Image 1 (tube, rainbow, N blue to C red):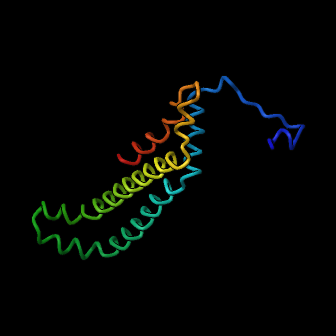
Image 2 (cartoon, one colour; image 1 turned 30 degrees about the horizontal axis):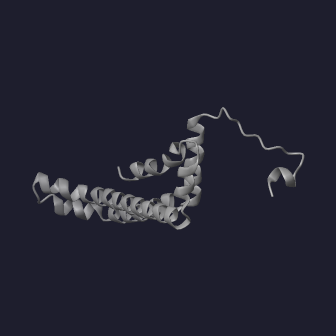
Length: 141
């Protein structure tokens, strides 16, 4: 039963002149709503990285005293190491989220055979297909 049938005083309005950008934005919002791991996993890794970074900062004076005995290249490596670890963890998380998101999308299409339905429709499916590669390209950078 539709919303208009439940509430006769409210009417549903669909604007046929809606821009492609607005349709894309709603598709992206829907993907975030359906796949919460797209933002929860990177936020969790960022939180853990932030806590570990603060723990490393508390021991920074000891690290710097021990690094003074090293040459300049090794000093730079000692100071740079936590930043490289955080960047690597975030990139790995993005790649894993992207891989599992792709696998889930392909499995969902296979399971409900909706790809056959979408191919049978007389309109282009590009507005429906573009949000998923956009997510993958943003996470794998």
